[in-house]
Figure 1: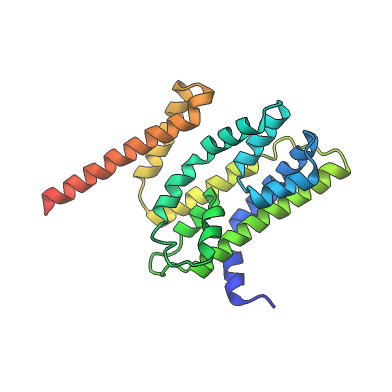
Figure 2: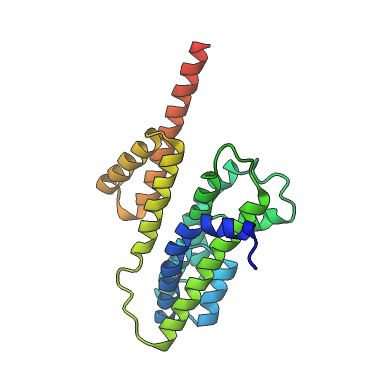
Length: 231
């Protein structure tokens, strides 16, 4: 019998499951297509668990890049997780033996779920662990499905990568409903559009993130200054 706690965590991770299963399957299929063994692909999903970083690694390996180049590129792509981790330092205090895994398993989607918990509820390390573990389980299961499909027969994977975009849309809507503030999302929208129009592809992601962070910081300091003047 599945306990009520695991059922609750499973319900929380349903949006991620619907994104991770097809996206993990796409990763498994593409790994087989570029010549990565099924065992290596599954090991990446278990021990690396980097989502977009795994797709980047496939592209670089297929282009003949060395492991050092793959490691540096993956580090740069996933450096945004540093900021996620900093914002969860207080939440993970006292997590004990669960803390290393909570840090390892912190993906964009897991971060969104953890920070979307109702404000009136105290953070639960056990719930955070279950959510993190289930999210990785969906990713590993999707990768296993993809490896099986890629090894058994030809599979047309065109368009399957849109699952990641759809997943981020759902998580963004959940965050918007929880925060009930339009400014962060308006800033994200305009910085994204501006980056698309101005920056070259190789600088697009970092440029958009840097600009959004600067604008959010400026908005935070403006709000803090306004509160001080009122006091």
